[in-house]
Every structure is written in structure tokens, then in C-alpha cells.
Length: 143
Image (cartoon, rainbow, N blue to C red):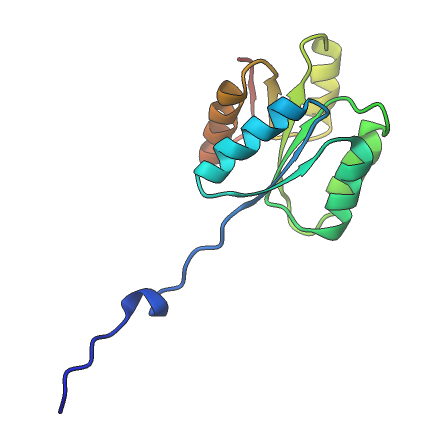
């Protein structure tokens, strides 16, 4: 009987990559964050404004959502309601603007965000989010 090599890779079940939505009006920040996440194996979708974020949330399922705390074209509460209607519970990371105060952070935390990250450096944001995702516990990070 001839020897037949088995292709073990095709038999193994490859883990599904986590899908990430990155929604912010800062194009440079969104682009850099998408690069960092894709480099670590995530599948990213970007939204450049609130209405686009709502459209993406209604058309796809995400395991991780990075969301700005402000959009000129949509109320964050409307976006939060859309997130809470999603099947499953995606990890929600709020990208807090530098001018937001503690009142906004408390409001966002009350709305059950998993992480609150102060925007400064895309790499530091990515590192903070990655830490939050690997720890899977609620935390507030200020970088």
C-alpha cells in the first residue's frame, strides 16, 4: 500500500478571526488602529462618522467595537442602543476625546462599556485595548 501524507492543516479547525469595528471621525487614528489590529490578525471594518457606524452595526456582527464618544451626525446614545440590540455581547471600547471630562467617562461607564480609553496615540490605544481584550475584565484605561 503506498504512503499517503496527511494534510493536518486542512483537518484542523482554524479559529475564527475576531471582527473589529473602529468608528471615529479622526481618519488618521482610524487608519492607524486598523493597521495595528490587522497586523495582530483581527478583521477590521471602519466607520468615519456616526451614521456609517450605525449602518455597519446593522449589517454585520462584531466581537469588538471601538467607538468615539462623539459624532456630529449621530447621537452616541442611538449608537449605544444599536450595540445593545446586537446578538451576543461584543466587547465595547469607548475612545474618549481629550476634552471630555469625568462626567462623560462616568456616563459611558454606566452604559456598560468594557473599556474607556483616552485618545492620544494610536499605538497606545491599541495596546490598551489589546490588554482589555486579553484580560476580559472591565477596566478604565487612560493613556
